[in-house]
Amino acid sequence: MLDKLGNRSKDVIWFIAESQDPNHTFGLVNKIETEVKSFYNKRKEAGEDATGRPMVGVGYSGGFVPLLEAIHRMNIPTASVVGAGAAIADIREVRETLEILGNALEYVQRNAFEPVSDLLQKFFGLIPVIGDFTASMIDVFFDKLSLIMVPGAMLTDAAWKALEQTVRLTLEATGVQAKMRDWQNIGPANVNSPDATLLNVYGDMDVLKTLNISGYRDRIGSFTGDKLINIEVVSLKDVATGKVMGLADHYIYFGKTRDYDEIEDPVLRASQREYDELVNDFMTKLILASSDSEKLQLFISQSVSDHKLQDMGNGKYKLFPTGY
Image (cartoon, rainbow, N blue to C red; front, side):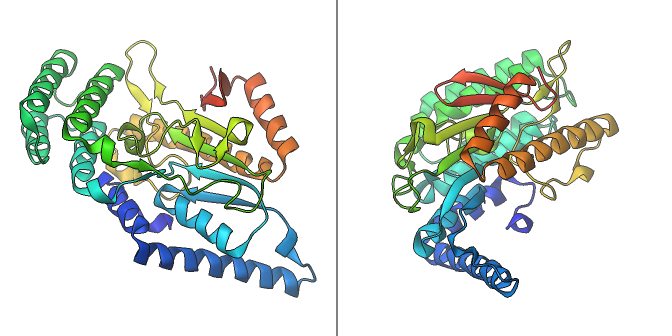
């Protein structure tokens, strides 16, 4: 599934929308089921009946809900489910608007600021029923951007927050947020493993988080309380300048999802690669630890002690890949 995602927000949103379509969902679920059956057959050939072994399910982006559907349909014993940049909102009705906003967000993330004003005006101008209120918010954003950015400059925390605010208000003004629905039909009862834990991992600059398709939730289906753990990956910023040196976007969770050739600055390219490798390492260890509840709690506790994870309370943690 990773090879289907290019470094384009539109591609990601298109993939999620297609994966949520009943016809496409059926195909994705079948693919997952085929892979699970293949694993069971290989273990059977090795003399093991693995059908009773609790599994760790990992769902990336739009593959999250189809994964849970496959677990439910096959009645797979589940120790935990890890969602990485997982789409946990139904976006089919508002895909077009989200693609426009996603492209605008990604354009700013890519730090190509000459002619950012004209291009973003075009993006936002395409949004249905944009209205005077949203247009005025875009003007406010450009005013803020002009104060904190120069052409070719790095993305700063202030610039990102200004754009986040613009996107949030645009979503509210166009009624998009009201049309997006969190999935309510997923949870321990549906995956047939009442003791399963769901780990919801997302980057603080993941385009899906900014659009509220992913991000912190206090409930996902019937996963809640101590059965739901939220982990927000924090972008790496230069303390002196506030510039982002490691972007916690949609391509941090696993290898082979980022095209490093697109990062022209060799210093930034090296910094992003190093940052991604740290996140990849954490994800690998998290997945391995998730096979057992005691192992998982021990791993989380150790990560807190090592100043990698910061406990924010209410089942939410922040991950600082380089430590804090």
